[in-house]
Structure formats: C-alpha cells, structure tokens
Length: 245
Length: 227
Image 1 (spheres, one colour):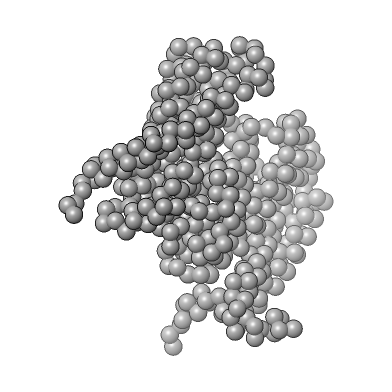
Image 2 (tube, rainbow over the protein chains, first blue to last red; image 1 turned 30 degrees about the horizontal axis):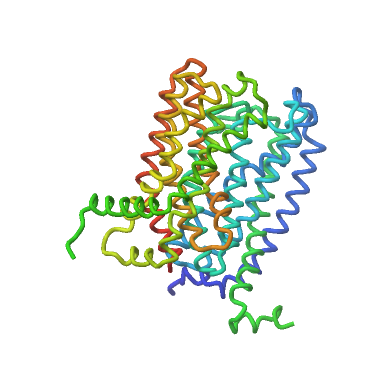
C-alpha cells in the first residue's frame, strides 16, 4: 500500500490531526514544568558564587535557546512555503512567530532580573543581550509585516522572504555584536562534559523539554485558529462540529 | 529592439533615476537636511563638552546616516510603482536583478553619497581629528551602499502598503546593525590608536556579500509585491 506522505500537508486534514496531537504535547509539557520547577527551586543546591539568584537561569536558559531555535524553524517553514507553495508551511511560520517573540521577551526579562543582583545592572550592553534584543526586533518585524498586508498570500510570501533574509543575517549580527563587546559568561553546558551539579542539569533539561513541548502544543493550537480563519468560507469548516455549534 | 548589455542596462536605469531626481531636487535635499539636523541635535541634547562629543561623533554620524537612509527608502520604488513603470520593468526581457541593482546604485548616489561628502563637515563640529575624519569618510563610503542594498529588500517588500514608511524602518534597521557596529568601530579604532583594517575588511566583506545577494532578493520581493 502506498503511503500518501502529503496527506497532512493539506490544512483540511491537518486541522483534525493537530487537534488530536495537542494533548500529547500539552500534558507532558505541564507535568515537566512542575517537575522541572520543583527540582530547580527545592532540590538543586544553592550556587557557591551566585547564591539563590542563579535559579533564574532555569527559566532563562530554555527561553533563550528556544527563542533562537524557533526563528530557524520559522525561517525553515517560510522557505518551504516559498519554494513548494504549501499553504500549511506559511501558516506554521505565522503560528510560530508570536511564541518565538514571547520567548525572546522572557529571555530578556529574566536576563534583566538575573543581571541586577549579579552584575549590579538591569541591562548591560553585552553581546548576547544585544543580539537577543535584535532577535526580538526581527520577530516583531516579521509579525508586523505579515499583519500589515491584507492579501494573505502576499503576506505569507513577503514575510517568508523577510524571515529567510533575517536567518542569513542572524549569524552576522551575532558575531558583529560579539566582537563589539563581550561581558556575558560563556556557556556552562558543553559537549565535553559540564561543571554543573546533577540536579541543576535535571532541572534545566526538564524545563527545556517542557518549553519545547509547550512550543509545539502552542503552535499547533495557533495554526488551527489560523486555518479556521483563512478557510472560514469553505464548506468543510462550516460543517465542523465546533463551528456549527 | 536591440538587446542591451548588462552595463548598458545598468547605465540606463541609473541615468534615468538620476535624471528624475534632478527634476525634483527637493527630495534629495530633504534627506540631506534631515541628516545634518539629526547630527546637530546631539550636542544640544547631551551638552557641548568637546571631549565627550569627540568620543561619540562617529556613532552619532552613523546613526543619523542610518535614519536618513531609512527616510529615503520608500521612494526607491514607489514612484515607478504608482505610474506603472515598475510593471513594465517586470515585463522587460532584461534581468530584473540587474534593473534592481541599477536602482540601488542610483539610490545610493542620491542618498548615500551626499551624506559621505558632507560627513567631514559635521565631524568638524564634533572636533574630530583629521585621521578620524578620513576614516569616517572611508567607512561611510563602504557602509552606505549596504544600507541602500538591504533597504531595497525592505522597500520592495513594503511596496504600496499603508504605513510603509515606518514599517520599512522596522524591518531594515535590525538588519543594518552590523554596518553600524563596524562602521563606527573603524573610527573608534583610529581614535584609540589601533588599526581599523579589521573593521574595514569586515565592512567590505559585508558589502560584497550584500552586493551578490540583495539585488536578487529584492527582485524576488518586487515580484511578490506586484503579483
């Protein structure tokens, strides 16, 4: 039997699939959040140098990682949509952008909260902070370009092109800002082992997984809304149980 | 119709855009006046201490250059879009990428080059040294074309949109940050007695990179906007 690989690339079929998938991502995400936060706040030992304030990084690190990662995923979907003209890819890119912007914002916010006790300043013009801020600007540019074009197909294509240009530019921005000034501490998790306590690692990975699953659940939920919005005039949407009632 | 060579086409587009601009000189002058004004506002805002002004001069000039190039961006394609010329350009048998490159060069000659030429005068207001002034001109000469090139993408994407002027700044400014960093960095390096070669090399590399890709991307953006 031939498998139809593209069955779920149609919004019609994906709408139902996404609805079924959401609980499988949302529930583990919620559980991992609770576990991760519990380990982070009650089990993990107090840091020798940074005392209690270091616990902010349990939120800060996953948010920063995902804010950058989501941009790449978004640009990937945007490229898919631009090249193969698949409607769903463009919708996924549109669905991911607000979550990415949210994580970039959380990352900056928690960074500021951490910076005050550690560096004695809410904001320091260091490479990572600055590039995270620029990343937030890129997300906002993507969202506002999409929002200001009325024709949805043009909006998809234009913002897709912007996302691709942005993703090419991100490394350039990152290195330029890095050479410009570096004050931020290097990463502690390296592939060659880590200097972190095991409970800290557990908390950070649990929360990273939780955030990851949250992103998936959230973007699926949002893409469902986008599908409904765009296909509002079709018969299949109007015959849906939740639409009719 | 005889086929134009690539350089013939470039020359034609540039000549045409320059001619159009010369018929309406006010547009070019406003950008320049805006640039001079923004730079002159800074000493009024932060105080007239020569030491501080000398330190921040390169950054101020660069930020003002960034802002005034944003100001002129919406004009890059909009006149041609409104009178239908752009549609004809899209239909022309010549490469759209080359056409766009021609428009970028013309835009730079009208909005970037005047800034480069007037920047030393502004630098004197900030009491910059001769070496620093010289470096400022070189860095601006390398950097302002990048602003026009990246800006072309933004201008093409926001063609004919409501509030396109503000939107284009929102899209293009973050992408131009490396130019600002290396451009202002080159002058700072000279000021602190170091070599500015690395900054200039990176700026030059960025310019070549942009030169290769941005005309093509802007052409694609135009096609998207004109569908």
